[in-house]
Length: 437
Ligand code: GDP
Ligand code: GDP
Image 1 (tube, protein in one colour):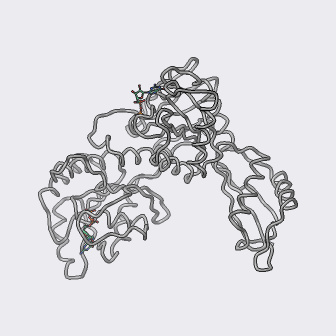
Image 2 (cartoon, rainbow, N blue to C red; image 1 turned 60 degrees about the vertical axis):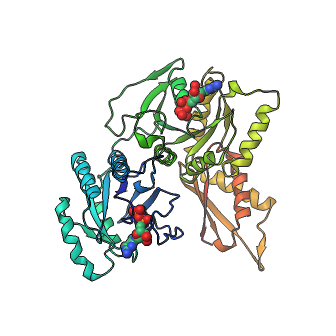
């Protein structure tokens, strides 16, 4: 389920990235005391009052060749209006209301989105008087904050979370497989989507969704229902910011969050680059099933070893996703395309697989008998009992005498044994160790 989105807008230097980092709790991100600090992330997740949400720092979307402040701020506000459920409009207590602030105010008003005004740099009590001016923006009570001292952030989150919509807008039946197609620009995502939807026996149903979900495409093949979730680049709507890389990564993340199965599209002609890894890693961390799709296979000069070499290269680059199957195809010629949906069905099934407790314990008992856990300072891990507690992804609790004694390598060994018995192809497995004798 996608999290609701809070976007931060405001002109440069009001403190957006400082606050963004505080909200996502990323203590490692050091905000240097100079204007225009570099940002490597613009999208993160936070939690407050039991609600989890995504946060976008729109200030991190830089537009190539765009150095006019007013235009830049306008583009960023447009992005926030399009993507967010609640907008945090950040202003600077020291600077007061500027022209750019007024421009943003007009845009936000027209959009009708819920807005919380955050007045930053209220570093001490004397500054509290400076916030009254911002009532004039017309968005209700401004919240005084200080990114430098971390004060007021709780009040800001109270106000923002309060305005989040109650529930996710669109849900699908349990048996509908939600598929996200992700990858860098030009790997062939839209070609692949069109090829899938154009396949024989595929029935595309055109539901008029809400504005946010109109980009989902439900379809059916051989009695199985699917939804394709749109990603950046698939629909070229012509907004300036859509061509920026950070925006495309952000869109991919949003699509991944809502998906069951993620198709990680790789350009077979070009091979693998780091950007492929960042996006795929997000699918893994979010516990989604994944399939590697090596596209443009028609354009690759091949002999009988080419496919094996490419597979090896994927395994080397994506070691953490050793479980994901690889499909080679061409969206253009449709060669091997028919292999894809059966693989999607299979990994979706494995992602939702529940194994009976007694079978799981038999496997674990065998594994422990074959290779007993190593001792640590004279103490030995004792594995008592295991049970699967949830699916999507399959999550297994292992009860032991002392969780401290469970080492990564032994956990990996148990995971491999479990996989060898139950398949779980295409899905990450989550193992958690708990104390219980
Ligand atoms: P952005 O461009 O809106 O993302 O702004 P930054 O987060 O990069 O911050 C701009 C500058 O303001 C940096 O030098 C920050 O250290 C500084 N800054 C951020 N928050 C505060 C604050 O609460 N008080 C003061 N005095 N400076 C701050
Ligand atoms: P996206 O940006 O990932 O959505 O990529 P597109 O679907 O727009 O494709 C980018 C380019 O790659 C276009 O020129 C396509 O015609 C081309 N392309 C897509 N799939 C294939 C394929 O299977 N083989 C070849 N040779 N070209 C392809």
